[in-house]
Length: 102
Image (cartoon, rainbow, N blue to C red):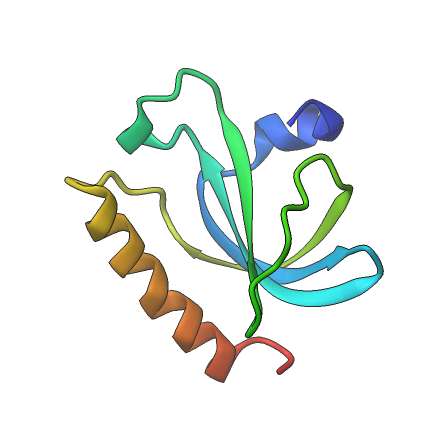
């Protein structure tokens, strides 16, 4: 978040879709911006989820670029981790078919 400076602070919380680059490879992706109320975070964070058919190796600490193509929905709270995971699967499938490049 620090790398974004004021741009990160100004981003509306919610779920965005777009394209990410990791180690020179393009991926369709979604990005969550907010406080992640399920985990009771006290700071605004950004999480990017890469959409790919194969299991990625751990890329923690690698540089990841994300280009926003659009806004999907506001940030939401969930009763359980399972509910959160289930809700994520629907937009990912819809995005693959409707908005993204693959």
